[in-house]
Length: 219
Length: 170
Image 1 (cartoon, rainbow over the protein chains, first blue to last red):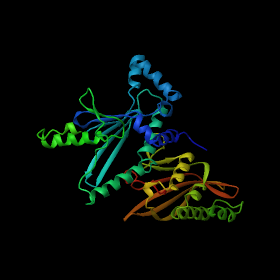
Image 2 (cartoon, rainbow over the protein chains, first blue to last red):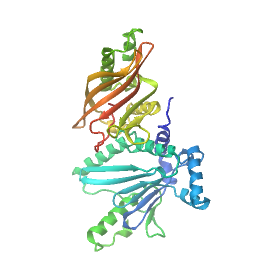
Image 3 (tube, each protein chain N blue to C red):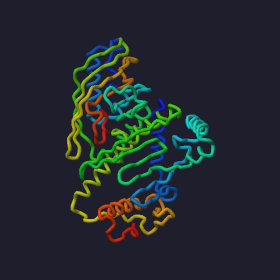
Image 4 (cartoon, each protein chain N blue to C red):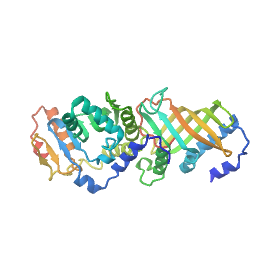
């Protein structure tokens, strides 16, 4: 099948998205921090990533990074393998793909997301092209991944505008979340809704300027 | 088997003139409106591409993000997905109605040419109707009497506006 290389990262990404439920339950973590921030721990096998260690483009990038920062610092940088870093209330970073997203709430039924792709100084040109391909397939308006996501967002909106249910259930993982040394709580696995509870907790704090009944224990 | 009928209708020696190109584009539009995406895919060359830029006058699909940029492999993936019962964004399915007009041949010879056309597509889905307008550029090639799409670029009028998902191809 003909490929000009544009689909390479996209195919990898779609395969990864299709990982079985047990994978998300057992190999992926989610961490939350005070003030609503959180990140989803990397679940990628390096061999499947754009940052695949054996990929010649990525090897070239590592070499350039080592020349600039030294081996130890390069290693430290490369070992930060987070998927999504979410900065409350509306910024999301996908550092592995040099991408920043900003979520703009326009109205209760209208949200616009801006995606920014970054070119790394001194990195091989192909790395940026991979970043673009990733954005095309994951964030593009016509992407194979995002279109189904948008459909689900729209359905959630329809559900919330109905009078069928007064409360949203966001308790998944509640009983198995654990505290961590940074003052946050960590989901036992990535399917915990701890990060949603954490965001609402921060929101409540801002809305009440700290006068609300303490709910952090419940987050 | 629209493809086969299309093949039978052509004479090997025919040149790629405006009339044939226009009929070809209308045939393509009809396949898409009818949801015959496999037949649509069959109109592309084995190394064909489908591109919807995100910026007016976008120079290339590699250095700037696009609404859609599919090489042949991604295009096959897209079409396979359109046939999947688990494509939530097409549950319910869209209905589309498109008009292809103002067709002109920009450059080319008897066996390959670039065709420019205007496209209007109305999409109806789950109570909402959307209107897309744009200019399409088809690079058409002729092989064994068959016209095939080597590349297709669709410049949407509102390509840089916030848009809800685009699932049905233009």
